[in-house]
Image (cartoon, rainbow, N blue to C red):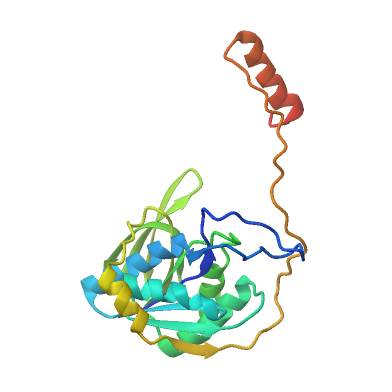
Length: 248
């Protein structure tokens, strides 16, 4: 079974993010980057599937030269091979999906895993774009998977509940927190991953479908009102929700 896992390089969730002077990108100075957490669930599920049924897991990412660090992390976790689609500059979800699709057409995966979203741009677009480009069935925000007789039974989160869908292979799965518990790579596996070859494929830049016009940090201004559970304060809370926040 050929399994493809798309991964992305994102700022650490504990990093202090600042906006660059151009007002459109983040300042990468002193920012630690990691393997996207949602992609860890996708990768773990792919590795477990390989361990149970055999096959090969290939991790793939789109990005600059420094993005190889997350591919090393994927190899340390248990991916068999890694592919780096090398490009510089800013790129959008359409570009990422389009370039990975080009590779997928040569690899012919039986199943494609990816996180439901990257924690930096939060677009949630790549899984849907990928499935559309390849005309494959897709299950998003998946929290449980079962494989029976070339069929995939996926449980996914929806607003107010859960939905169970059945798909045939090949298909695309986007992973949600709760699907599994990603493993921590052991030191010997980390050392081996440093020596494994990574296939590099240079990809030509293209015009983005989406342009970032501006970027700014959230405002920290707050009213800082402290209220109690007295009748007067409860009435004041109701008034603020109705008149100030206008939530009802």
